[in-house]
Image (cartoon, rainbow, N blue to C red):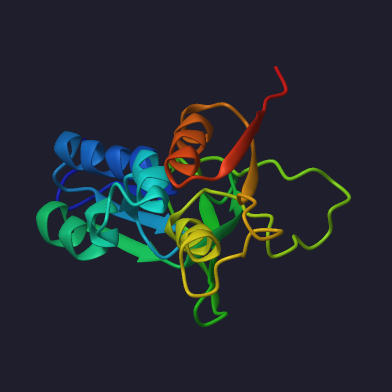
Length: 198
């Protein structure tokens, strides 16, 4: 534990469930630590298992997916939260991380005494696809869920292939999110195929 005269600098890379939980736990363990959380996306903490239910319309309010805002984490736990900030490198000898502010393009270094890596996962996109076509999407964050909703039910929804034929989808991956997505697509009347490597 650090002291108010010599606070420990804790840097956490990534938010959502892992990073935000690590940050609040670090605060409970050390009331004096200077805790900084960097999240590369817009939202620091959201219910990622709720994303398919938002796409399917069972969760109607997008705001219901937001678990904690940067303001809440700063006010309640004194955690400095920097969204739209991507950690691009770690210098273990100097104990600094290199950070890109994705909003402004500015780059800087942040020193740390302790470093927690919680960057989450990234959907595996098969090589050779290049830039993804508009009808090929991943589901990792709220922006992805918004994009899928627009494709399915929004004003720019993809029309069925021919009159009377159902919209068809392929879900790749049968983890929790993949299975929930299959359920919600079926709920929307989409003819769905599930593909799993294992």
